[in-house]
Image (cartoon, rainbow, N blue to C red; front, side):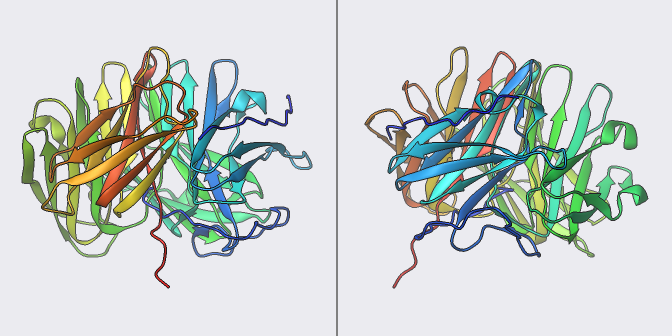
Length: 447
């Protein structure tokens, strides 16, 4: 294990769908921090982001992306899942309206390394991109979340693997109950009731042996005691993707639901007691397809909508339900897997930390305007590239806008729009495909 204090000067992700806190005072040290249930939230005087899926070993590495709208220092803490062992740590400075990256292998190489990142200024955001043999995964880390986390989009069909990670970032033990529903109904998971997770540690639950050959599996994690940050990974022999859990909402937006040369499907889970009416709108380069799918979704059976019924290139989507639901999309290409939950809210400002141009990779920003009948003007600015200028694009109503990442030197991006919209990003390379939601920035409160 190597320990290195990393200082990288910077020149300039949930279910998802959480607003970024904008702290004024410097945060208290994390030592001894206890986050009170219910749910997950950073202390009011700090901006702390939790990243359950970071990994670094001989075959793969992770890159943390950080971005901030004000000058800040990002302090990394990577707990060791061995009692008594001190956590690895590092820090990265971020100039105002800037971004920076940190490779995990510069701090620790021990396989799985869930951790958290603390900022002393902001608004700020963090993402983690995992690259290596048979993996390309990316997602925004979380600063807040519900007490009940849902993971639509799972599958344990032959040659697929599905693993739930339950990360406890606090210095107190936690306890959770894991339940599931699938295409065969409610699953029996009695052995996962009251599952204990040690302080500053994590547990993995592998479902390919526990629930075999489920095509439409939704896993729910309910916090009983303490605080956890769960994440899920779906993969096959060629690629895998991580995604965070989400809460419940009556509307979900997917600025990207499918890209060219992929098949896709959208999964809606109803965690309530009664049936819920659901409609799915699709958005194409030729305009919207309103109510492309409709269904009555019961609590026992998740609904799966096949996006391949609308052939062509990329798609965006929106789910509208008569009651609270959870939703995610899955895109499958040749040796590619990408999974992403929906955005439960719109915003005018979004941070995309860690998004950058890489050799042999294609990266894109996706913008979706469903909140206005008029076009929305959006400025897409690279961060961390030494004063690179932004590009202003027009996002027509109901037509997803793709902005390819072509500039070099950027370590993240900022999107500022004239009206609220939703934003996501994708990266595609030799080892797979990944989708990630951007991180919305809260509008300042009126005095």
